[in-house]
Image (cartoon, rainbow, N blue to C red; front, side, top):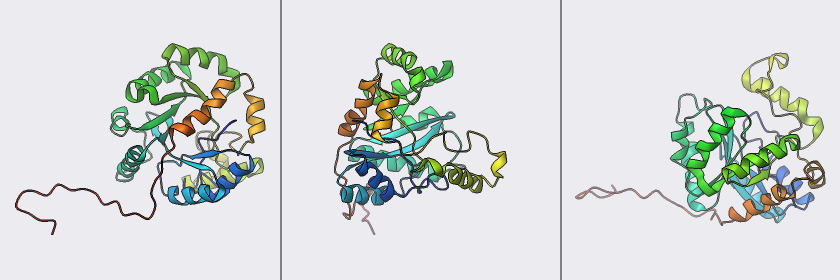
Length: 259
């Protein structure tokens, strides 16, 4: 069993193409019991995503993608407190003058409680960054595997770090033939011609909604890493009440009332 943990919806503005409902229906069609949404910087689509998943009879996994020191990291809430931390993180990014700029590690550490982090660790610099993440997230950190060709080396690194490895696949659109549309959308976002876009400007190659069968075929030698998608889904199981006011608690100085 494999579960997509890192999908991007149209709420990843001018990056993702599929709506939350379309993603949920795709997961249901593949028999996936859960689905993760990790839009870039934003949680705007989360409520729509929860409703869509509930309508499809699958578990929503609420997440966020951010860039820290040039590295993309996916964060998933494991509880209501973890969700609150994602909200605080997204709000803090929105208040910055240039929210798309890479953030510092200390910024991320402020919002790490009850949050799972998914990150790769390619190269010497990647390994160095991963060790920083281990200090921040502890047993809530997973090493991601997206290319089976480097699976053995990544598996050895995961063991050396004492962290589990999980297979992930970034999803930005539903069908393979939508890659050109995503590229056009990226050109609009960046106000550039399509020809001038770099590989970093667009979604990764093949970032469509791969079936369970295709994922199992690609990563047949890494069954444990595939199954950990279910483990993560279980760790991210909590009920987020919708339609219930949750006002901030503000300490009132002595002698004053809220008015």
